[in-house]
Image (cartoon, rainbow, N blue to C red; front, side):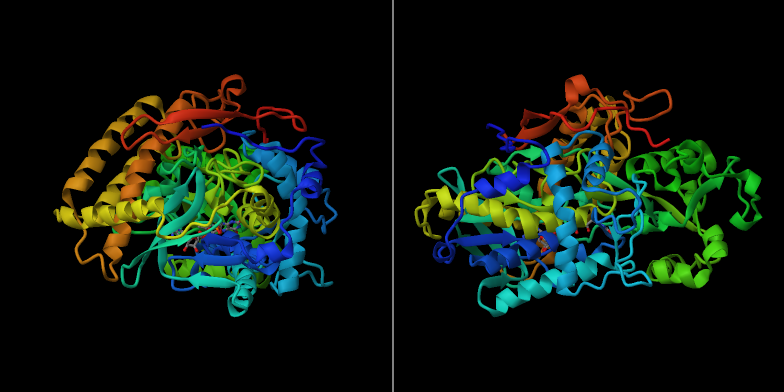
Length: 637
Ligand SMILES: Cc1cc2nc3c(=O)[nH]c(=O)nc-3n(C[C@H](O)[C@H](O)[C@H](O)COP(=O)(O)OP(=O)(O)OC[C@H]3O[C@@H](n4cnc5c(N)ncnc54)[C@H](O)[C@@H]3O)c2cc1C
């Protein structure tokens, strides 16, 4: 396996423009002849499928939900970044680029991040043209707020429903193409494998979630826009359906998996309340614009928050990071929350919580302003906890939320398998070791609306692609293997439910490969995962039939993949003997408890090659060169 990042030559500021000018084009008549498969209809997939069809390609789009509109992107709350500098507060393309590289603790590719910052401004125009109702200032300009790790206001938002509004925009564009016959939409259809012929991705094998039918779809290129894998932890802020299956199966067919251990634990989630829970709820980072985070100064202080005087409160982020205060980046804010709770100063049941307090903001701005900014989030919090956050501070605690790791892709978003692309959260590309808030929507839409439509044409224009169909021997073999795996899952007929296995795996990953990690814990986790995986294949009970709607079977397939993938995550975390961003190895920290990078040994992307289940994966390194930014110890003080 060879990693060829394909970063264009020239100055950082000119790379994308020059690349676009030099890229090969497919003429309009030929576009009609190319069939492209897009798996996923979230912001990345829907924007890509709509844009490719608009260009004239013949597109098939797949998702496992009953409608593209139900993709997990709909859950995104807080906003989307863009370097428009409407606030005139010092923002620029370079500053967005710099904040993102620094926020990612210098573990991302400069060229990709710069392109992302450049494109960010176009995304807002595109979405406004589609009618996305971004919040506006009194004078009519689009409004902005701040997110963590930055000192400007560049986040565009639609109350706490930004993802939903953006997805409606992308979905309208997609629907237009479906109606025009340019996109064939396959809802309730799950990708279970990728068909690789002569080293190129030429199709996928799917299972209908309605009646269990397996089918092979062939194409000239395959795009995976299948989202992130935070559900490896079982409890996360992701929708229950989010999984690693598509990119894991692609990995098993030759696509390198990059930085799998870079998983974001978000600081502001409603604390877990017990083993009965199947999901955690995010309280958007936007709340940190006006909410102040604190815990009692004394351990074990049981008084209600209104009884704790100002002098006995520790606004620990404001104390430790005076320049950024409550808007410290997620990885840092999460670790500090864990630290104060581990010290015995946590609040709420079990002491796993810190306060997010709006008292001062309400006094300063008045309740109506706070309601206008965050009303739906406050309502959600109250419905879940039974507490009124206008009166009592919210309680929050970190939870798994986003995955920076994903399929390795080059500058063109192509994986190590030719013709196989990964976009959105499914790839590893732009966020390094820690994503800044409001940058996932930006990246997914940049990939789908603006990058892929160019770069895929470059591939199609020059690739020699003989006609293939579902009868091809490789396609038939892949379909047989999928059928066999499904049959095996049903045959086990053991005693334990899929969910209990998933829960146990998730707990193990949270304890050993979660907010902080160490070598001994990771080694133990690798052993334990292998044992658990064996038990799963000996003792899982799926029930029902393959030729039917069978949600237990769907879940079982995804959990089986999580078991294989979790081992890779731990290998990656073990191999990276440094702390960077979200990856906090307890052995490598500064005296102040901050992440201590080792640039000499680890300034690279770790891209793993699959060698077999339970076999040691092979590591390939893509060195990271920094020309425009200086590597420095990240500081938010
Ligand atoms: C609660 C929450 C709030 C967030 N808020 C923000 C925010 O304010 N700003 C921000 O920038 N980011 C936010 N994020 C992150 C952001 O929402 C996601 O990273 C982003 O929406 C992912 O988009 P996507 O298109 O890559 O994937 P998704 O939206 O997850 O879509 C994945 C698609 O792939 C399909 N799929 C997956 N596997 C298969 C398969 N095997 N076969 C067929 N189809 C498959 C699914 O059906 C779906 O259509 C938030 C995340 C969460 C959890």
